Image (cartoon, rainbow, N blue to C red; front, side, top):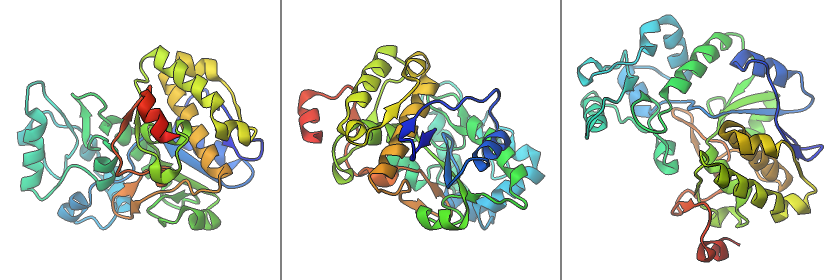
Amino acid sequence: MADTRSRRAGRWRFPHIDFHRVLDAASALDGDVVIGFDCALGVPESFLAASHLPSFEALLAHLAAQPDFARPVDSVAAWCLDRPFFRVPAGAGSRGLFEACAARQGVVLWRDIDRRTGANPVFITAGIPGSVGSGALALWQQLAVEMPGRTFGLWPFDGADLDELLQRRRVVVGEIYPRVAYAVALLDAPPQHRARLRLAKTQQHARETALATLLQRPWVKNHGVTIDDCEDAVASEDVFDALLTASAFLRCALEGRSVGGPAAVAEGGILLTGALNLALPELQWPLKATSMAGQT
């Protein structure tokens, strides 16, 4: 959690995390709250069009009414609009076969924001590194329950201008992607010169060096920011991702920048992408001396 008033980022502990508990806890806080989930919110516009669904909200209602929609398929022959989630079988070219099958039904598996950030398609649940479909399904099923009569905002589906949305809904839920947050938290460059940053978070040494660098960043020192729970983040890659993302949110808020980004009401968007330049080639952590010079 990042608190702009205390200028502090640190771990927010829950005995058990699910969407309802997080929403209740956030709603009890004072002031406006943005909740970020490391999970895709939205599907390719082509999928909505092929399925004759007008919006992502309509898809959530469809998911609640059709449980089979959430059952991943294992073969290309079984893939269809009614069961779009799939596991990639072993073997070269397996994913490409699903892509071709989807294309024949008018669907491109990637959202625009997925391509621009290097993320995987939302429909893949297993079989390749970094698959995100199982997490999306878990969140969507919980989110669908909360949608009727909801009081929270869903970015960007309720409005792409996050600041304006927060004026209408005190609590707003959106999608995050740690690789975006790494760049915002760790790079000194201004947003127009700030590239995406790949970091081997599974390696403890990489987490240690990144956190040590974060604590020394000028924005941390100049704004009197306190970063808590660094030891927990060294020990756990999940805590590391959460702490770096909270720090990135805090930086944007203290520098007066929106935590939103490019978004499409049909496909969604990823928070914090407005604080970097997605057109730049991705950097690798730790930065080489020449790259470091170009970023500072």
